[in-house]
Length: 288
Image (cartoon, rainbow, N blue to C red):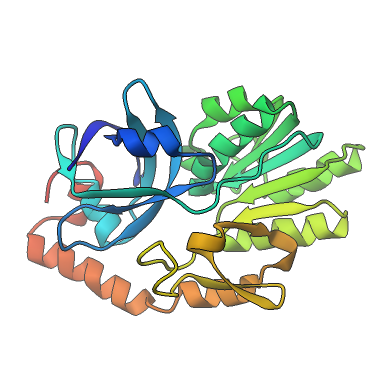
């Protein structure tokens, strides 16, 4: 069993957990993830490792309550334990000194971007970060991202913090004033990553993205996480989760992500009905 050491609310429906998992913490590298089960017969969910504390033997996971399992997880508190934290899984980010690196994160995608940005800076790169969200209350890890970057720009769709607009607007603004980049790393919603890649392709900036397809076992056995990269079929859990963004078929990825939307909605509604609780109470951190 893996004990929850710390729980912190970062924003509406977004929670940070530190979980005791010393072996995972010892071997984890930026870009890798774990598979978590919150009960013996529960769903397996992939979550990127946002940080580690080797002294404490813990991994930091950031969870957004969007479905039945992630919603149920918000009812767990320090002292509780989960049966499975499997990892680290996936290929780590290839980190080297390439020069000037642009790190772009959207929404919950800022969580996996943070260790990559920090690793790129520690490798000697000049790191410029752009982080965005729909509104100010959905921005996460702002202070950590600032520490990992030489410059940081904040954008919000509604203008409640930083620049009003999308992360792509800020990318274009930087290029228009003469900034150049040797590499872009983009993590966030698929449509955001697609738009970033369309722009960086236009300017000839190599771009790495981290994909989040449907995933079950995390070892390449089930094939659920298949994505098309160039002319090849890849499995995000073992071939990724990071790929050349200019080669990813984002339209296929977005379509596949909606495959079980109706079932996911039914599961969430059934969870609220069977547990006899209000879903908003769970989101506030109460137990089901």
